[in-house]
Image (cartoon, rainbow, N blue to C red; front, side):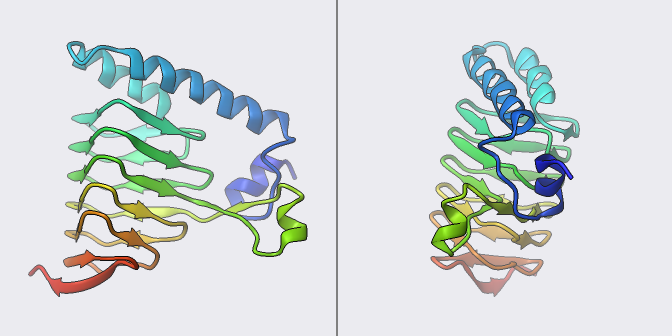
Length: 185
């Protein structure tokens, strides 16, 4: 099994020595660099270009510069999708955003997991767990979403939160660690 297949399956893999993964990352980093250079005065060009980076997109998407990701092909975004400035998506596993999702500035979505065991970690092995963001979700600025998290439909995640566990539908959730504080329905 290739390192890429291991990555997609959530198994331990080595991203640092596998030529296919190295090439995939290099390709998307070049695309992100080019994307981040497109002037704001060319929104149609920006929208068309982000579709070269993401694995799947809906209609009416906007991703502000600067934007960075690891592979791009593991990112899916629904209709009416907006990312504010300085977003990082480490998409070693699938990162799926529903429709009508708004993401504030300086947010990070990280699927990569590194072993706690130092001997394994020093072999450059890692694994990844997917992230899923439901429909009608607003994520405030400076939010970090960690591997394996699902945020349900109709949620609001308060600015500065670190989301380490699933957030149920219709929740206002805040804090570090992020916890639901009230139901929005």
